[in-house]
Length: 206
Image (cartoon, rainbow, N blue to C red; front, side, top):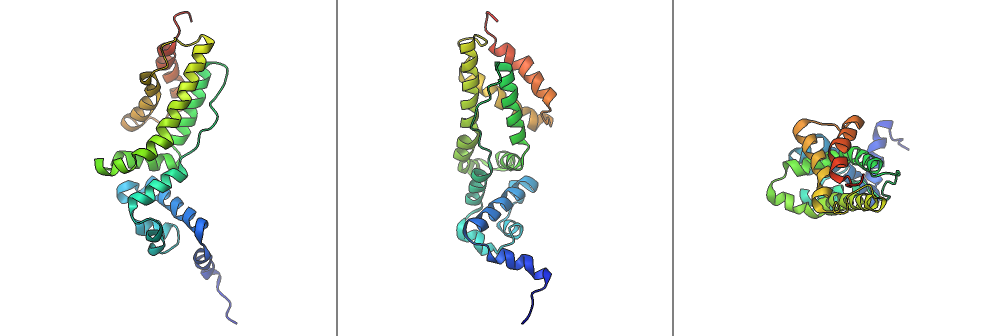
């Protein structure tokens, strides 16, 4: 009987993967590619190599790069369930922004930004629903709950629950991250909340 060498073991292990296990490996490899070489550098061949599988296995599941990336983002984006409740609107916003910062600088976060920044208009349309459903809508929902809770507490002015207010934090974080190289350290988050959001939200009686 011929005994397989130790060098053959990884290839044999990879070859035995099927179904959800192999798909997860391919999606993880796609996120790795996006976060390191970006959208323009990602290739189906590179993803297959990263997943230690054949190119045919990738194309069999995802006929195009856009299809693969859309599913990789859906699978990798963090899910925010509970809205922070730290006792005040300031502390709630700080907790929420720290979560957003951690998500932005995670592997899926880098992958998402490479798609947003590098795709052309036609390609970007393919990911609109992924970005809106996975990032924009959950963020606005949480911000709305924090602001409306602050209104009920009397901390926040009654007309502050509007789209311009809800856009302020995501827009600021994305802009300063892209244009200024800001990594949103805790001190920078506190400064944004104290110098922008607290004055913007403050109730006239506060």
